[in-house]
Image (cartoon, rainbow, N blue to C red):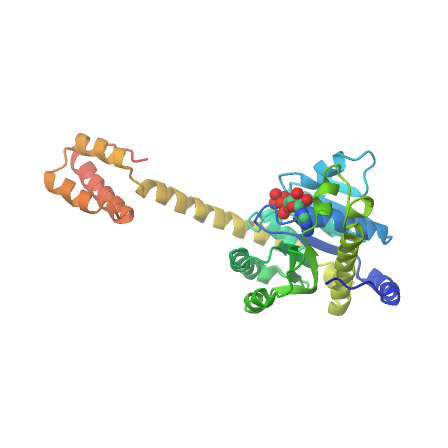
Length: 337
Ligand SMILES: Nc1ncnc2c1ncn2[C@@H]1O[C@H](COP(=O)(O)OP(=O)(O)OP(=O)(O)O)[C@@H](O)[C@H]1O
Ligand SMILES: [Mg+2]
Protein backbone atom coordinates (compact mmCIF):
# COMPACT_ATOMS: atom_id res chain seq x y z
CA UNK A 1 0.00 0.00 0.00
CA UNK A 2 1.09 3.56 -0.58
CA UNK A 3 1.98 5.19 2.72
CA UNK A 4 0.97 8.80 3.44
CA UNK A 5 3.85 11.16 2.80
CA UNK A 6 5.87 12.48 5.66
CA UNK A 7 6.14 16.29 5.44
CA UNK A 8 9.66 16.51 6.90
CA UNK A 9 10.92 13.84 4.57
CA UNK A 10 9.40 15.73 1.67
CA UNK A 11 11.17 18.96 2.58
CA UNK A 12 14.51 17.21 3.04
CA UNK A 13 14.23 15.43 -0.27
CA UNK A 14 13.18 18.53 -2.14
CA UNK A 15 16.21 20.38 -0.83
CA UNK A 16 18.70 17.63 -1.57
CA UNK A 17 17.48 16.70 -5.02
CA UNK A 18 18.36 20.07 -6.55
CA UNK A 19 22.06 19.13 -6.58
CA UNK A 20 21.17 16.17 -8.79
CA UNK A 21 19.42 18.08 -11.55
CA UNK A 22 18.59 17.47 -14.24
CA UNK A 23 16.90 14.27 -13.18
CA UNK A 24 16.01 12.29 -16.29
CA UNK A 25 13.35 9.61 -16.06
CA UNK A 26 12.48 7.35 -18.93
CA UNK A 27 9.37 5.19 -19.22
CA UNK A 28 9.72 2.23 -21.51
CA UNK A 29 8.28 -1.17 -22.29
CA UNK A 30 7.86 -2.87 -25.63
CA UNK A 31 4.31 -3.83 -24.78
CA UNK A 32 1.50 -1.35 -25.41
CA UNK A 33 -1.15 -0.36 -22.90
CA UNK A 34 0.91 -1.01 -19.76
CA UNK A 35 0.64 2.61 -18.59
CA UNK A 36 3.82 4.33 -19.80
CA UNK A 37 2.08 7.45 -21.07
CA UNK A 38 -0.33 7.55 -18.12
CA UNK A 39 2.57 7.52 -15.70
CA UNK A 40 4.73 9.90 -17.74
CA UNK A 41 1.88 12.41 -17.98
CA UNK A 42 0.89 12.18 -14.32
CA UNK A 43 4.47 12.19 -13.04
CA UNK A 44 5.16 15.32 -15.07
CA UNK A 45 2.20 17.03 -13.45
CA UNK A 46 3.18 15.79 -10.04
CA UNK A 47 6.72 17.19 -10.30
CA UNK A 48 5.25 20.45 -11.62
CA UNK A 49 2.93 20.66 -8.61
CA UNK A 50 5.91 20.06 -6.34
CA UNK A 51 7.44 23.16 -7.90
CA UNK A 52 9.95 21.74 -10.39
CA UNK A 53 10.54 22.84 -13.92
CA UNK A 54 9.44 19.87 -15.99
CA UNK A 55 9.89 18.93 -19.62
CA UNK A 56 8.04 15.95 -21.08
CA UNK A 57 9.44 14.35 -24.22
CA UNK A 58 7.13 12.22 -26.31
CA UNK A 59 9.35 9.95 -28.39
CA UNK A 60 6.64 7.37 -28.99
CA UNK A 61 5.37 7.29 -32.54
CA UNK A 62 1.81 7.15 -31.18
CA UNK A 63 2.01 10.72 -29.80
CA UNK A 64 0.03 9.80 -26.68
CA UNK A 65 1.26 12.62 -24.44
CA UNK A 66 1.18 15.18 -27.24
CA UNK A 67 -2.37 14.03 -28.07
CA UNK A 68 -3.51 14.29 -24.46
CA UNK A 69 -2.03 17.72 -24.09
CA UNK A 70 -3.83 18.89 -27.22
CA UNK A 71 -7.16 18.07 -25.55
CA UNK A 72 -6.47 20.71 -22.94
CA UNK A 73 -7.19 24.39 -23.21
CA UNK A 74 -3.98 25.25 -21.42
CA UNK A 75 -0.97 22.93 -21.68
CA UNK A 76 0.21 21.94 -18.21
CA UNK A 77 3.89 21.34 -18.88
CA UNK A 78 6.35 21.82 -21.65
CA UNK A 79 5.73 18.83 -23.94
CA UNK A 80 7.86 18.15 -26.97
CA UNK A 81 7.62 15.59 -29.74
CA UNK A 82 11.00 14.10 -30.62
CA UNK A 83 11.51 11.52 -33.34
CA UNK A 84 15.04 12.33 -34.27
CA UNK A 85 18.22 11.03 -32.62
CA UNK A 86 20.18 14.24 -32.81
CA UNK A 87 17.35 16.24 -31.33
CA UNK A 88 16.95 13.78 -28.45
CA UNK A 89 20.67 13.80 -27.70
CA UNK A 90 20.74 17.61 -27.83
CA UNK A 91 17.79 17.93 -25.47
CA UNK A 92 19.28 15.47 -22.99
CA UNK A 93 22.67 17.13 -23.11
CA UNK A 94 21.31 20.66 -23.07
CA UNK A 95 19.01 20.01 -20.15
CA UNK A 96 21.99 21.13 -18.01
CA UNK A 97 22.03 24.53 -19.53
CA UNK A 98 18.34 25.14 -20.25
CA UNK A 99 17.51 24.86 -16.56
CA UNK A 100 15.24 21.85 -16.91
CA UNK A 101 15.05 20.21 -13.57
CA UNK A 102 13.05 17.13 -14.42
CA UNK A 103 12.99 15.56 -17.84
CA UNK A 104 10.48 12.79 -18.39
CA UNK A 105 10.61 10.66 -21.54
CA UNK A 106 7.66 8.65 -22.80
CA UNK A 107 9.17 5.91 -24.98
CA UNK A 108 7.78 2.78 -26.58
CA UNK A 109 9.88 -0.39 -26.83
CA UNK A 110 13.54 -1.20 -26.34
CA UNK A 111 14.48 -1.87 -29.95
CA UNK A 112 14.82 1.47 -31.67
CA UNK A 113 18.05 3.43 -31.44
CA UNK A 114 16.01 6.37 -30.21
CA UNK A 115 14.64 4.31 -27.31
CA UNK A 116 18.10 2.98 -26.47
CA UNK A 117 19.52 6.49 -26.43
CA UNK A 118 16.72 7.48 -24.06
CA UNK A 119 17.60 4.57 -21.77
CA UNK A 120 21.31 5.41 -21.79
CA UNK A 121 20.63 9.10 -21.35
CA UNK A 122 18.39 8.65 -18.32
CA UNK A 123 19.10 8.42 -14.64
CA UNK A 124 16.20 6.12 -13.98
CA UNK A 125 14.32 3.79 -16.30
CA UNK A 126 10.89 2.91 -15.14
CA UNK A 127 8.94 0.06 -16.70
CA UNK A 128 5.29 -0.34 -15.78
CA UNK A 129 4.10 -3.91 -15.64
CA UNK A 130 1.06 -5.90 -14.56
CA UNK A 131 1.44 -8.72 -12.02
CA UNK A 132 0.79 -11.50 -14.52
CA UNK A 133 3.65 -14.00 -14.68
CA UNK A 134 3.48 -14.35 -18.46
CA UNK A 135 3.90 -10.60 -18.84
CA UNK A 136 6.82 -10.51 -16.45
CA UNK A 137 8.59 -13.35 -18.21
CA UNK A 138 7.91 -11.70 -21.53
CA UNK A 139 9.48 -8.48 -20.34
CA UNK A 140 12.50 -9.35 -18.20
CA UNK A 141 14.45 -11.27 -20.80
CA UNK A 142 14.05 -8.56 -23.39
CA UNK A 143 14.75 -5.82 -20.85
CA UNK A 144 17.84 -7.61 -19.58
CA UNK A 145 19.11 -8.19 -23.11
CA UNK A 146 18.72 -4.48 -23.88
CA UNK A 147 20.49 -3.49 -20.67
CA UNK A 148 23.38 -5.83 -21.48
CA UNK A 149 23.60 -4.32 -24.93
CA UNK A 150 23.86 -0.80 -23.58
CA UNK A 151 26.19 -1.74 -20.70
CA UNK A 152 29.37 -0.58 -22.45
CA UNK A 153 27.86 2.88 -22.92
CA UNK A 154 26.49 3.27 -19.44
CA UNK A 155 28.66 6.11 -18.20
CA UNK A 156 26.42 7.10 -15.34
CA UNK A 157 24.79 4.80 -12.87
CA UNK A 158 21.48 4.04 -14.53
CA UNK A 159 18.79 2.52 -12.32
CA UNK A 160 16.19 0.25 -13.85
CA UNK A 161 12.93 -0.39 -12.09
CA UNK A 162 9.81 -2.35 -12.71
CA UNK A 163 6.77 -0.60 -11.35
CA UNK A 164 3.65 -2.64 -10.82
CA UNK A 165 0.77 -0.86 -12.47
CA UNK A 166 -2.94 -1.58 -12.90
CA UNK A 167 -2.87 -4.04 -10.01
CA UNK A 168 -6.11 -5.41 -8.61
CA UNK A 169 -7.01 -3.46 -5.45
CA UNK A 170 -6.98 -6.60 -3.29
CA UNK A 171 -3.75 -8.11 -4.62
CA UNK A 172 -1.13 -8.20 -1.87
CA UNK A 173 1.40 -10.89 -2.55
CA UNK A 174 3.99 -10.13 -5.20
CA UNK A 175 6.68 -12.63 -4.14
CA UNK A 176 6.42 -14.53 -7.42
CA UNK A 177 7.34 -11.35 -9.28
CA UNK A 178 10.15 -10.47 -6.91
CA UNK A 179 11.60 -13.93 -7.38
CA UNK A 180 11.70 -13.60 -11.14
CA UNK A 181 13.14 -10.10 -11.04
CA UNK A 182 15.79 -11.10 -8.48
CA UNK A 183 17.41 -13.25 -11.15
CA UNK A 184 18.25 -10.13 -13.10
CA UNK A 185 20.76 -8.04 -11.13
CA UNK A 186 20.35 -4.97 -13.31
CA UNK A 187 16.61 -4.77 -12.71
CA UNK A 188 14.93 -3.92 -9.42
CA UNK A 189 11.39 -3.67 -8.27
CA UNK A 190 9.79 -0.48 -7.07
CA UNK A 191 8.95 -2.37 -3.90
CA UNK A 192 6.86 -0.09 -1.79
CA UNK A 193 4.82 1.49 -4.55
CA UNK A 194 2.15 -0.27 -6.47
CA UNK A 195 -0.21 1.58 -8.70
CA UNK A 196 -3.69 0.14 -8.41
CA UNK A 197 -6.17 -0.37 -11.17
CA UNK A 198 -8.26 2.78 -10.78
CA UNK A 199 -10.80 4.12 -13.19
CA UNK A 200 -9.61 7.68 -12.46
CA UNK A 201 -6.42 7.09 -14.47
CA UNK A 202 -8.48 6.28 -17.51
CA UNK A 203 -11.30 8.75 -16.98
CA UNK A 204 -9.06 11.74 -16.36
CA UNK A 205 -7.21 10.91 -19.59
CA UNK A 206 -10.35 11.42 -21.68
CA UNK A 207 -10.06 15.18 -21.60
CA UNK A 208 -6.29 15.34 -21.19
CA UNK A 209 -6.36 15.83 -17.42
CA UNK A 210 -4.09 14.31 -14.84
CA UNK A 211 -5.36 12.67 -11.66
CA UNK A 212 -4.46 15.87 -9.77
CA UNK A 213 -7.08 17.75 -11.73
CA UNK A 214 -9.89 15.22 -11.43
CA UNK A 215 -11.08 15.88 -7.89
CA UNK A 216 -14.65 14.85 -8.72
CA UNK A 217 -13.59 11.29 -9.58
CA UNK A 218 -13.47 8.36 -7.18
CA UNK A 219 -9.97 7.43 -6.05
CA UNK A 220 -8.68 10.99 -6.54
CA UNK A 221 -6.74 11.15 -3.28
CA UNK A 222 -5.39 7.61 -3.55
CA UNK A 223 -4.20 8.15 -7.12
CA UNK A 224 -2.54 11.47 -6.19
CA UNK A 225 -0.73 9.73 -3.32
CA UNK A 226 0.43 6.96 -5.60
CA UNK A 227 1.89 9.35 -8.13
CA UNK A 228 3.44 11.66 -5.55
CA UNK A 229 5.01 8.68 -3.81
CA UNK A 230 6.62 7.64 -7.07
CA UNK A 231 8.08 11.15 -7.44
CA UNK A 232 9.59 10.99 -3.96
CA UNK A 233 10.88 7.49 -4.48
CA UNK A 234 12.54 8.60 -7.71
CA UNK A 235 14.21 11.48 -5.90
CA UNK A 236 15.34 9.20 -3.08
CA UNK A 237 16.88 6.74 -5.52
CA UNK A 238 18.79 9.54 -7.19
CA UNK A 239 20.01 11.02 -3.93
CA UNK A 240 21.10 7.59 -2.63
CA UNK A 241 23.09 6.95 -5.77
CA UNK A 242 24.96 10.18 -5.26
CA UNK A 243 26.07 10.46 -8.89
CA UNK A 244 27.65 13.85 -9.27
CA UNK A 245 27.00 16.37 -12.00
CA UNK A 246 30.38 15.98 -13.69
CA UNK A 247 29.61 12.31 -14.35
CA UNK A 248 26.08 13.09 -15.44
CA UNK A 249 27.30 15.57 -17.99
CA UNK A 250 29.08 12.77 -19.82
CA UNK A 251 25.95 10.77 -20.42
CA UNK A 252 25.55 11.11 -24.16
CA UNK A 253 28.92 11.87 -25.68
CA UNK A 254 29.38 11.76 -29.43
CA UNK A 255 31.28 8.48 -29.11
CA UNK A 256 28.41 6.84 -27.28
CA UNK A 257 25.84 8.06 -29.78
CA UNK A 258 27.93 6.97 -32.74
CA UNK A 259 28.69 3.60 -31.26
CA UNK A 260 25.10 2.76 -30.31
CA UNK A 261 23.87 3.94 -33.70
CA UNK A 262 26.48 1.88 -35.59
CA UNK A 263 25.74 -1.17 -33.47
CA UNK A 264 22.05 -0.79 -34.06
CA UNK A 265 22.59 -0.44 -37.80
CA UNK A 266 24.67 -3.61 -37.82
CA UNK A 267 21.98 -5.38 -35.83
CA UNK A 268 19.25 -4.10 -38.16
CA UNK A 269 21.25 -5.33 -41.14
CA UNK A 270 21.70 -8.72 -39.53
CA UNK A 271 17.98 -8.86 -38.78
CA UNK A 272 17.25 -7.91 -42.38
CA UNK A 273 19.63 -10.61 -43.60
CA UNK A 274 17.80 -13.11 -41.41
CA UNK A 275 14.44 -12.00 -42.78
CA UNK A 276 15.70 -12.25 -46.36
CA UNK A 277 17.20 -15.65 -45.64
CA UNK A 278 13.92 -16.84 -44.14
CA UNK A 279 11.97 -15.49 -47.09
CA UNK A 280 14.26 -17.18 -49.56
CA UNK A 281 13.97 -20.47 -47.79
CA UNK A 282 10.23 -20.34 -47.36
CA UNK A 283 8.66 -22.31 -50.14
CA UNK A 284 4.92 -22.38 -50.27
CA UNK A 285 3.04 -25.42 -51.47
CA UNK A 286 1.65 -23.56 -54.43
CA UNK A 287 5.18 -22.53 -55.44
CA UNK A 288 6.24 -26.08 -55.03
CA UNK A 289 3.53 -27.20 -57.43
CA UNK A 290 4.49 -24.49 -59.88
CA UNK A 291 8.10 -25.41 -59.56
CA UNK A 292 7.50 -29.12 -59.94
CA UNK A 293 5.69 -28.40 -63.20
CA UNK A 294 8.35 -26.09 -64.50
CA UNK A 295 11.26 -28.37 -63.74
CA UNK A 296 9.37 -31.61 -64.23
CA UNK A 297 10.23 -33.24 -60.91
CA UNK A 298 11.18 -36.84 -61.00
CA UNK A 299 8.44 -38.74 -59.21
CA UNK A 300 10.76 -39.89 -56.50
CA UNK A 301 11.45 -36.27 -55.52
CA UNK A 302 7.79 -35.55 -55.23
CA UNK A 303 7.29 -38.47 -52.87
CA UNK A 304 10.29 -37.40 -50.90
CA UNK A 305 8.90 -33.89 -50.64
CA UNK A 306 5.47 -35.08 -49.59
CA UNK A 307 7.06 -37.05 -46.78
CA UNK A 308 8.81 -33.92 -45.60
CA UNK A 309 5.80 -31.68 -45.90
CA UNK A 310 5.47 -31.35 -42.11
CA UNK A 311 9.00 -30.06 -41.80
CA UNK A 312 9.10 -26.78 -43.67
CA UNK A 313 12.76 -26.09 -42.91
CA UNK A 314 13.96 -29.40 -44.25
CA UNK A 315 11.60 -29.09 -47.12
CA UNK A 316 12.77 -25.66 -48.08
CA UNK A 317 16.44 -26.55 -47.96
CA UNK A 318 15.65 -29.63 -50.01
CA UNK A 319 13.84 -27.55 -52.59
CA UNK A 320 16.45 -24.83 -52.63
CA UNK A 321 19.13 -27.42 -53.25
CA UNK A 322 17.05 -28.95 -55.99
CA UNK A 323 16.49 -25.57 -57.58
CA UNK A 324 20.15 -24.72 -57.41
CA UNK A 325 21.06 -27.95 -59.07
CA UNK A 326 18.42 -27.49 -61.75
CA UNK A 327 19.45 -23.91 -62.34
CA UNK A 328 23.07 -24.87 -62.69
CA UNK A 329 22.18 -27.56 -65.14
CA UNK A 330 19.75 -25.59 -67.24
CA UNK A 331 20.72 -22.00 -66.44
CA UNK A 332 17.18 -21.23 -65.36
CA UNK A 333 16.07 -18.22 -63.40
CA UNK A 334 13.48 -19.18 -60.88
CA UNK A 335 12.31 -16.90 -58.13
CA UNK A 336 11.04 -18.47 -54.97
CA UNK A 337 8.89 -16.14 -52.85
N1 LIG B 1 -3.25 2.31 -12.89
C1 LIG B 1 -4.16 2.35 -13.86
N2 LIG B 1 -5.46 2.06 -13.59
C2 LIG B 1 -6.39 2.06 -14.55
N3 LIG B 1 -6.16 2.35 -15.83
C3 LIG B 1 -4.89 2.63 -16.17
C4 LIG B 1 -3.81 2.65 -15.21
N4 LIG B 1 -2.67 2.96 -15.86
C5 LIG B 1 -3.02 3.13 -17.17
N5 LIG B 1 -4.32 2.92 -17.36
C6 LIG B 1 -5.08 2.99 -18.61
O1 LIG B 1 -4.57 2.01 -19.51
C7 LIG B 1 -4.62 2.48 -20.85
C8 LIG B 1 -3.25 2.35 -21.48
O2 LIG B 1 -2.36 3.19 -20.82
P1 LIG B 1 -1.21 3.99 -21.57
O3 LIG B 1 -1.71 4.61 -22.83
O4 LIG B 1 -0.57 4.87 -20.57
O5 LIG B 1 -0.24 2.79 -21.94
P2 LIG B 1 1.12 2.82 -22.78
O6 LIG B 1 2.01 1.82 -22.15
O7 LIG B 1 1.62 4.21 -22.90
O8 LIG B 1 0.63 2.27 -24.17
P3 LIG B 1 1.25 2.53 -25.63
O9 LIG B 1 2.48 1.64 -25.72
O10 LIG B 1 0.15 2.08 -26.51
O11 LIG B 1 1.60 3.97 -25.75
C9 LIG B 1 -5.08 3.92 -20.79
O12 LIG B 1 -6.45 3.98 -21.13
C10 LIG B 1 -4.87 4.32 -19.35
O13 LIG B 1 -5.78 5.29 -18.94
MG1 LIG C 1 2.04 5.41 -24.55
